[in-house]
Image 1 (cartoon, one colour):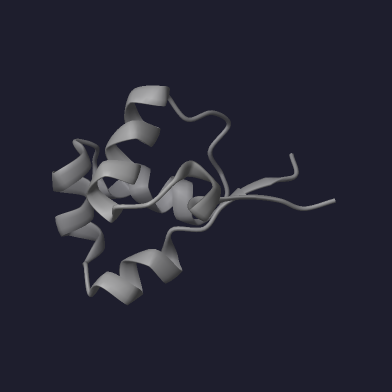
Image 2: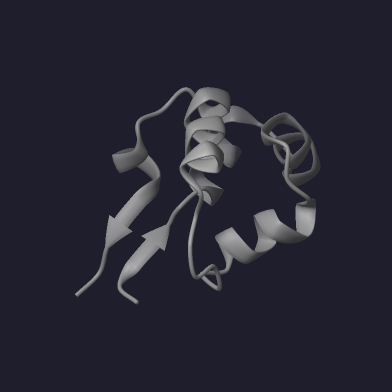
Length: 67
């Protein structure tokens, strides 16, 4: 799949750890790692909503299409 989730940069810019981020959005650190490493097959809209709320960003800030 050519859709990538790029949350590493956003977490670094905000000085947020994976554990803190996972707790804030309501998923496990292991599932955050799945997102970060590009192994996710799908993302629920509720999770995407929580990610954008916590990181104060738009979906396009963390989703990237690669040809």
